[in-house]
Length: 474
Image 1 (cartoon, rainbow, N blue to C red):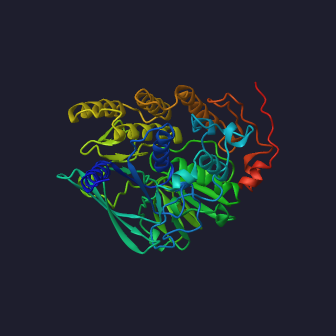
Image 2 (cartoon, rainbow, N blue to C red):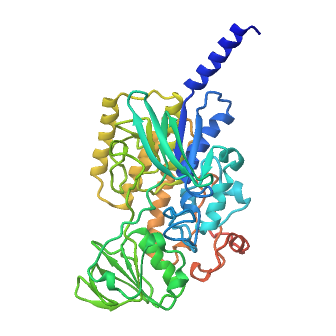
Image 3 (cartoon, helix red, strand yellow):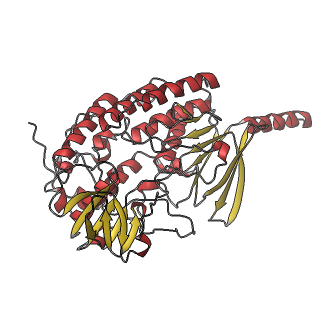
């Protein structure tokens, strides 16, 4: 090869390298893994025009919120603990509503299992679909993102991270940034007069780890969300003496077992005595704030930061994914959720197609008009679970029509969500004993061999060794 030919070849290779897109994915939890898998699926289908991908993950492993840790506060690197997972969590929604369209529970476990598995079983299923060897090559672990900025001239992002493994700061440029950090890790901690002098334990749900801590104790749970409902139930299951749930506007409204009750919002504390807005009082050993989370993106400047509350359709996100002021910035999983894993897949597939250029990005005016349609619909929701479920189903179907992700029975799952709500209302402590057919394989879930309240060891090994009972069909 002559020197001239070699030089031209080198320049051509350099041009290809320089023109290749680069994508940063922030987080390797369910959202980030969905995005990684979307690209990996394209690679496995034979695509050769894929971008260079780097996924930055603050933790030492994949899984995000599904990684249980006993730690609270700061992790081993001095970073705020991301996860809010607690030891005895069970699915509080039917597994049939979160089943992957291309990977069933039947395929993973080789047999039917109950509709409400515990944390370790669900995580095993989630991880089972992932080719971890293929996925992990994209991920830099223990690398929290410090700052992201965008240059209008170069049309590129600069991402700065701390690599705790090498004790270095890394700065790299990207064409796209996918924010997949979730929004259930920064506690919304309220203040009540006198709480600073409460003599017992005060914590947020983010730091709740083990219900056994509250055995034989009188526990006040502040909030009326699903986390309040579930943490209160966990405390009851593992032996709390009493649980009082304090609500702001409306009670949860279940028929609670003896030892559990609801009262209106606490107004203030005097020592260990809580005063409620109805004039009643009660003494407590512990207070658990189940008061939600804040959208928190400290690594983003104002012009790139999503400003929203927890809702069914955040403003400024085209198709619920692309940041309207700068569609090279992508947010995954920012909606309030009924659908979870399958919804994240659909969002990630759409984002992938935009990045690859398989979908033409609409102009700003068209995007804004589409956002307005969804936001107008959102503003008319009455707040009921049923309306919210149908709204989210419509959103998923809208995205499904744009991508090649496998179709799945979105409407059937919506009806199953509504049945779940009825089952909870009927028996809040027994709804996890209900069974449903898979909307993917039609396999009927098996029944637990004894009541949920009596199954105290919910490890993967213990749960899968239970003698599940074939469900009876009415």
